[in-house]
Length: 261
Image (tube, rainbow, N blue to C red; front, top):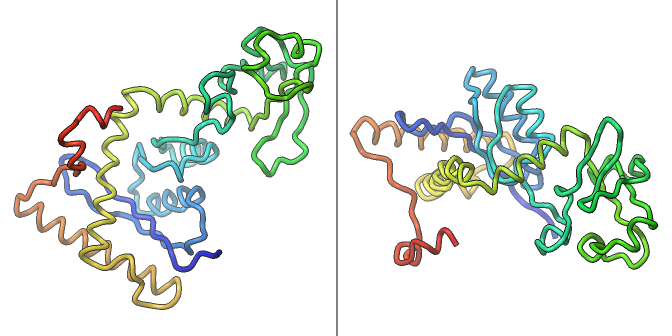
């Protein structure tokens, strides 16, 4: 029914030759979405002269506009899984999803996998849903098309392709393609250790429970908690304690192939 409490966003270093330290802490009400926090984190890191070349994040931080703005404003490449195409064509993997349509942005024409071209390109009447343009195909081309069942469930109406801005569309399609590659999986695997940071802060310092009332005091607690975790990690580093490997379930240990399934 409602959100109660706060969220904490932790940013830590991942250099294999140095201890993994928390370098930025942001606290927000629990109802605040993750996407806008990337710019806040980058602005804070820029003031400290600690901006990374690459920032690995989870799916909650990979809005298409975030990918664009991070590169444009801070020259930081965001690496993380983006949302899948929500259309049934992509989910069923049996139809023509949006990535299979060729978009000519200069001519404002969309070409379908069967080679038919859209007949109109209009502004979306409800841009709040993120769709800026709508490209519509003709009934004359769509109705007799042998691939219609793979394109739309509509009985009469032709396919309408909703498009974001050019930059958002292109960066999102490129990210969706890239995250299917082994190169991406290997690169993103390094982020798995961030879950241990939350676990360490929760178990050792009680991060999940706020000792104070109000956002400012809760943020202070989060900062102190991060500092405590950093001190523990520095002590272990100076004592030569190796970083523990990422844990896996007992089932995965018995059946390693299950992870790749």
